[in-house]
Length: 413
Image 1 (tube, rainbow, N blue to C red):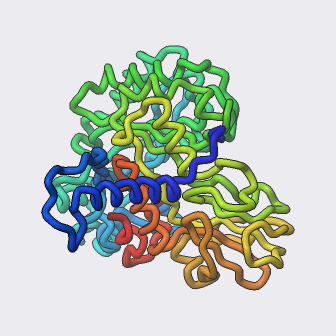
Image 2: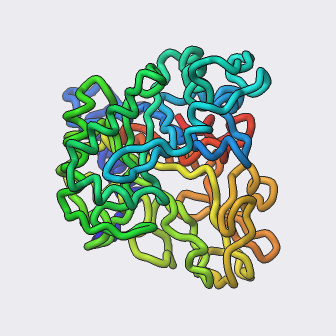
């Protein structure tokens, strides 16, 4: 990651000490005499208040997490934006993901945001209609349609060959009159331009910038254009593989995915928190943490106000672990509700309660399982960091991982 170790707490202490020293010299601290001259002060960064939550299209199936749950959990009242995930990218164009879930599924009165059941002949049903009902309850809430993601990013390489045609297809889909009023813009989750994620891309360093420029040109200034981007700040890593700084003028903000740094894809360990805020003794990969990611992106000249802090509403874990502290060996991924090595916060808080903290996040040892995840307390720590850095806000992956009463979303300021 970033070649120079970046320890924000040490830096903040140094800044605080300098500020206190200046204040003492000017007689500004409690008990001091009247100041004869104001001490020079460093400009204060102002943190943004965006709170963006991902709502997954597939969450309405096994998870039974409906748009109504965004309301009943108290999340809707705290969110400024929802990212609806995901639309597909195929044939060089934006495409519908699951049309049944999006526009066709009939909701009962009990499942519906407003308590009114769908009828067989209404023109729009599904998640899109439910989102319209949610926006009616919360007029300031904005919704973006996210395209790509881990599974559906393979199509971006083809899309990058003709950015204008891609942008036109996305505009036509997002702004389709059949669901007029649902979406306020588009979010691009390309994992990853000119690098490897689930699949590898060789579209070139400028492809991402060209795609984002075309989207902004087509959608105009009246719609939001955002992107989820890699958190890999290693020298020559994924951030260096694409021109994120060059694309920054075309986006309203970036969502750097500051989680999934470590996980049980390294089946034998060492155990490590998947969303460390900063470095710690024994971290498996130097500078593989949120502070390094944000420092690298800011160092490229991307404004802090265009960077949101990513919070995972889930944990990652190993089994066959004997050591409670991070850095232990394992025999494989821990069992999860839907897939191995990952589970929702709402499950983990009871199944494997946190037993310690490291690098601004929490970890838990229960039996031979070892998990890491954020809690309301560690989210509070990250909010302090977000404010100190002057970031544009916070985004979360994803809303269904929270408790029914929104413990985690309530910890986001």
